[in-house]
Length: 521
Image 1 (cartoon, rainbow, N blue to C red):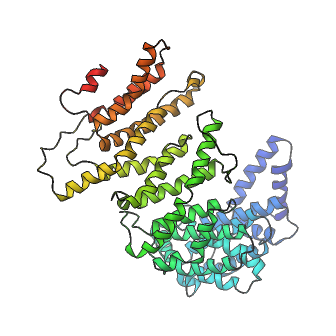
Image 2 (cartoon, rainbow, N blue to C red; image 1 turned 90 degrees about the horizontal axis):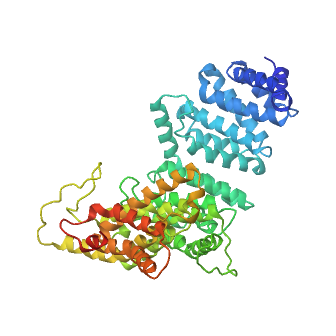
Image 3 (spheres, rainbow, N blue to C red; image 1 turned 90 degrees about the vertical axis):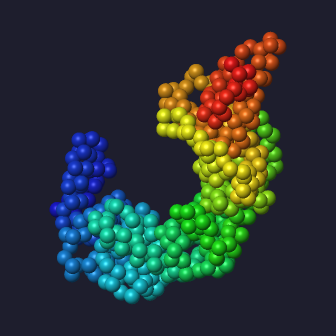
């Protein structure tokens, strides 16, 4: 299986007109990738400047796959030569096709899993990569190092690498312990950046290392991290169209390193960072509001749009902003649930997300509302069982103590927000005019959306109370009744939505007669 045979098969796969020939070439190439010869031939093709682009990518992909799955085919003595060859190829393709560079970086990342840290020298694989790149011209080293710094943490726990689970965990721990070195290297890359694309890559890697560390291996305290160049670049990138999405990922990871990811308990030492992150995220609210009004106007809904504003965000950008608001709310749920005036901006931001016309974006807020309702839920309140029945209510509680009085104060503080949530949700549950033209899949999607919205109504009713929730849900039905009495046609969609809402919160109904329910009957 020589290099000419490989190139001939690739030419047939990509350029031959006969489908049978293409299929035969594909089968041959798949079998060839599993052969031992694939190591040397792939290396040879990648070192050959005359190799066509499809051959370079295929061979880079082959080497990545071989390192991940077939590393044991190589003798231990070949480790050094393979490592050096992969690095040489990476530098050679520093200005070539990015997909080839990515595959080579993935191969090196997989190799770092197979090869124990001591065999890389002091500091492990990350220090070895940094040392080797230090002797390379900056223009060639920068894109390679950034790619490596990005894929190393992303691939740390990848099941694609054929190693034992204990080695995978050990490798992830080794990398996490190198987070400080990684941030130093990324800061150097950021200082050498000449454009937004390089900064975007640095932020992508920054977010990946923060996620891998889980906030447990950071060499920086809250004030230092708040003033760190990578943090300031991430926050500034929220205002850049080119850097926005990488900045969102990085800021989300920054948010979660300030709390325990399992308990959401805030790390007091990180308060200086929190005080920088939250205001920066909340400053996105005007942009998000404009995007919501534009979408509502495009969909024919009411809402004036100021065409002179400076914002023109697409759906993905709106989703990124909603994600930031939600991460703030969920990460700092205990702080939000304290019910002080300072927490109103995040709560109002989540209301704005919940009212967003696009359900895929509005649904980003659902987990926050569920968590907040759980924090405010009354003690001894009945909850629905798996079959929809009530659990038995707890015995009558003793006179309220200070803790219960404080809980009641917080419930009253959040009631207006949950009432707005109920009003907004009841409108989403109504079948649209075009429902009769929907496909089967669209009907199924709407049913799933209704189930999610019903759960949110259930959570809201636990805070607002059954009587007030029922009154809000019946308002459309009362208006419909008045319209019909005035000679207007009966709108079955409004009636059906109101009854669906009532059924969603029915388990909150108190024992004994309920006047509003009796009136409905």
